[in-house]
Image (cartoon, rainbow, N blue to C red; front, side):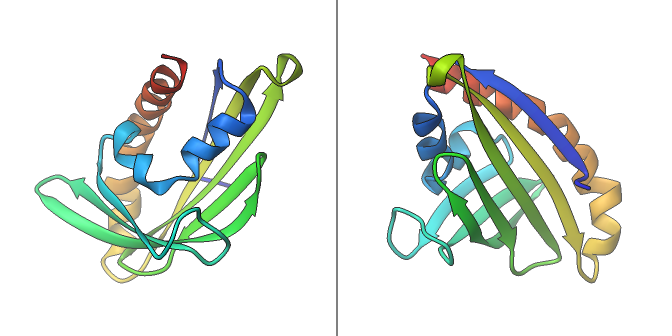
Length: 146
């Protein structure tokens, strides 16, 4: 069971929503804490592709390497953190609505804490993400619909 699950309906085709979300360079456009997301290797992503994501957590910039472990276009993807004290685990699902003219995006987000991260996950990371995730999905909806 994931720590957080959030869904939102978007007035764009599933293929377009999926393509936007699986292009890591878009991450800072809709996630407030993401300062940068740099692919390690070529785009488009494939299973095994890695991304260096840098997040602003308070006054600190924290880099994390994420790896695509599942891709099922245009339905779902799964990325997992492979280093650092806090390792995100994100699953995205895009369901077609209204004959495929609209989409329902569901994000499941959880974290593994390693070392100091064991204390940071429940005290800092999960509360921050619970606030950021709904704002991020609304920002994403706005970006994709305009």
